[in-house]
Figure (tube, rainbow, N blue to C red):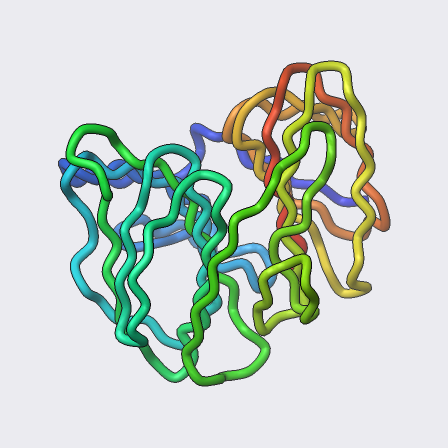
Length: 233
């Protein structure tokens, strides 16, 4: 197993008054030639949007976009006719495909909204599509949320990728089994403290893992973890 740790404070920063962003990979005005993505995972942004603000209508194409709201509510509207509000425990997926536009706003005028947004490079170009689902995140279980396999349990994207979220209590252990033979795992600790092999991560740290079949995790604090398995070769 090969690993690279990405400390939380090594991420890029974007401060735009109403928007407070941390970039795991090169994005917007932040550029780092060593941080261009992890396999087909191109973007992982950690955003806080102030009350009453948001992103005006803007275009996307040829990207699988996944939004995870951590706190608050995010209002969404797109050129496909979808109007929705995304809240914690909801996962949103958009295939930007041949091209679409959308806007995203904080649904509240009192409270900030905190979210993660991921962009994954697809394995083919398709017509734009939208999906959203609410999940039940039981304690001490890794819950699959997104995959490249069409099934009733996860949201679908056009890539051999598998995303899971787990909420674990202090003292618990878990093992993640890597599904794809050409895949690596980008593990992002949303909050808490976790140890794997000789590496320990704390809140917002990440680790890139390749050449592994399974990953053993020990949780030193109550923790929330995002596992992103994507092709790396």
